[in-house]
Image 1 (cartoon, rainbow, N blue to C red):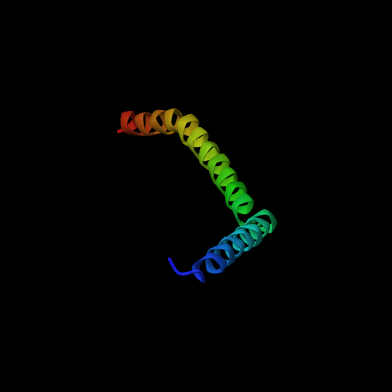
Image 2: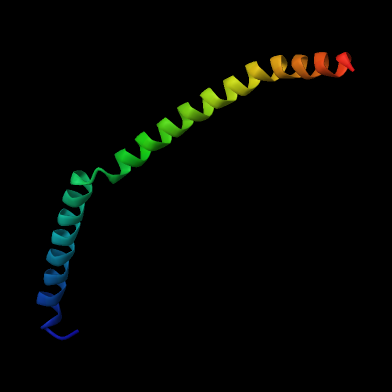
Length: 72
């Protein structure tokens, strides 16, 4: 190995450490993940509400259609 490769290696380590430090700071400041989780929780709540409504109205609607069919 040439003697000049040692400074390049230490410079690459420093560059990698600096890059990782900056990346971790940027990720810590970013709120995109938190926002996505919040939207997912809202969507799950809406889905549960729709499913509960359909389940409870399903029996009522079936009885309504049955009474309409029996009328004829």
